[in-house]
Image 1 (spheres, rainbow, N blue to C red):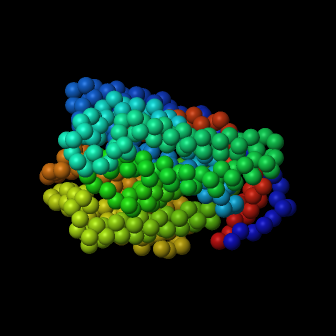
Image 2: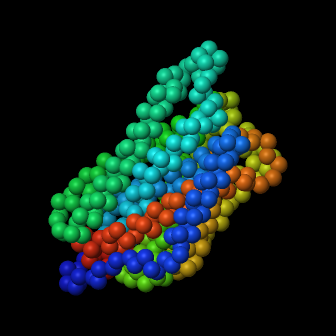
Image 3: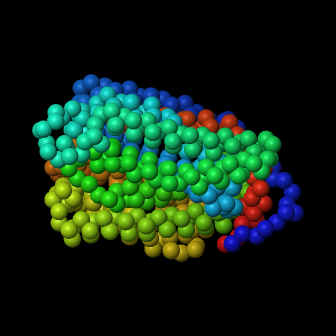
Length: 401
């Protein structure tokens, strides 16, 4: 519960000073540029391997960005007070979604190496023929435009309205953001689910799972909340977000715990139902990932994503200890990395004898991550560090659990 107070004096307005970053933006931009350049060379000389590597890096950061948008929409849909002080960072990260449309272009240029149905002639595979016109190039492109357009509209509108409210304090912004939040959650769910079908399940169009969208959502929500914890703590170390207290970390930790459990529940449910039914069209996904070293990585993911963080996050002490919570958050982000890796790469290398990420998987990850991190740092200075005239700000400042 939150304490309601209207006697608080207006909090000090915090604006980010880029000098606190030192040379970090230049380092990130240079790393991103070098990573993208090296990956471009990979597209020339090792096109198939690099195509999967770029999809892996793209999918990792895309799921996290969509997760940030989910938390932003949930804040407005539920009229939450606790998250007001950290909401601007959710908005900043979610507003990176339009850039993913540009990062998606390289995948279109190498689409036939990723999605084998892309240029397959009619009559070659009866199963593919039965999935027309869904698995057709023109409809694939229409859907991709729809995903990026809707997600970008939601993210940019919510951030724009939030910043506008800092200037005039008008209540109409809160009402508009609430409508976008309520409508945005099902829209976001549709985009993430069908993007997961198109880009990830599409790597082997013979396979399908009706729980795939929920599985991706569970990973996206948990990893994005973990990244938020790390960013808030880093900003506090630089002297910002001074009003964020241990109660805020406690709530963020509880959400990390909730989606740690939810991810395990959905993952087990999907696996159990497919194993029990034993239908070839469904089991093909796990037949690859339950053999050899892929089986070791899949088993490690189960323990690393659920059994390791679950008992730690159960205790109030760990959730109210920012440094400890940051360690768990970093671990969950690493597990999200492994999760996406296991989803994408086995489609290229089903026979895997050891964990040795390809050079271009590293360059693609650094290239995409470096560029996105640089863009995020640019957005930090474009508005105040938290919504200064949100009507629920006083409740967030006086938050207690």
